[in-house]
Amino acid sequence: MSTRTLIRGGLVVTAADEVHADVLIEDGRVAALAAHGSDAAAGWSAGRTVDATGRYVIPGGVDVHTHMELPFGGTSASDTFETGTRAAAWGGTTTIVDFAVQTAGRSLREGLDAWYAKADGVCAIDYAFHMILSDVNEHTLKEMDLLVQEGITSFKLFMAYPGVFYSDDGQILRAMQRSAGNGGLIMAHAENGIAIDVLVEQALARGETDPRYHGEVRKSLLEAEATHRAIQLSRVAGSPLYVVHVSAQEAVAELAAARDKGLPVFGETCPQYLFLSTDNLAEPGFEGAKYVCSTPLRPKEHQAALWRGLRTNDLQVVSTDHCPFCFTGQKELGRGDFSKIPNGLPGVENRMDLLHQAVVDGHISRRRWIEIACATPARMFGLYPQKGTIAPGADADIVVYDPHTTQVLSAGTHHMNVDYSAYEGRTVTGRVETVLSRGEPVLDRRTYVGRAGHGIFVPRSTCQYLN
Image: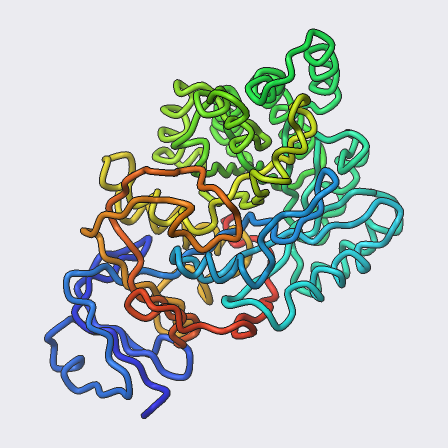
């Protein structure tokens, strides 16, 4: 009896349905759903009952783009796997897919093992990995096949950051050809890094050193150009393509045109592009440094195209690209030279709430909220239906969500290990109340009851979103 949990009286919202139902959980999985008040539900008993009256009962969020403990620009992301996964749980996310990094000149295996070691035994929620390819060669291409068999079924390539992560078109094509054969999904950071570096050099030479110039040199046209190029390379290779952190309306147009041709091309955006803009980068003093990320924040007029893309399914996923650096001591590395500001924003705790606010504001429907934050990320990266839905047999990763309570987002109350909030002072409607991960409480009516080490590594199948 003690392994059974019953969630009673809530509105169960999935990507497919909204139904007033009770949910029975047994041995860490969803055992059954039945209409609230039905004979079937009335007959259920459990060691633990959660009253969800007046609440939504939703699948735990699946954030497929995080960077815990990422070394970058002479420093390292301030959230560890322990602090970052705890913060994710506070925000209603129960699975993350983080990025293991290959060091140029070293094997994929060495990079992956380093990330296994960082995450092992400390995560509050379940986790998986993508692999960043920094050095595409005959050896690493063969390793890709082995990683797919191990459940690492997606590979990220950078068209930006020359000298760090950058791959040229030939390397990208080879990796795409390999993934066409092994079933892996290529993820692209689509910005023309070679051209951007020229613009950075010219801006600094003119004395344009403030954070706002970070956005001005990383032109939306150079995001669109790289997106177009990645799409054409994927067509030549015969492989699907997933473009990460799409921020510019011109890049959305490239994805939409490809999808109109029936191509297996997908796009992700992030809350920062939906809710923040170049106005934040231009905040006085050095405050704009808090908002330096790549792709950069765009002028506000780009937001309408992103929301439209989410409604029309030209963009399928919202993830965070959570990569926090403290303002004090880390972002400050770029005082006097915007190119030295570590690129990244905190957000793993805010995604589900900000997207619920988008429901309140009429941008998306409730089911679309769950689709872009839970179900599609799980399907895109081979985790469905274990993750991303509430259905018999699925992991009992479930959030009881209060859609009426308002909260003010602030560094003073968030749980991410970073000294500022990108959304400081913003009031949103809706708040996570209780979180279960594989049936175990992580958050119980706003009290944290989780533990480091509960979260386990989840191997993934190949992309389930292609058919």
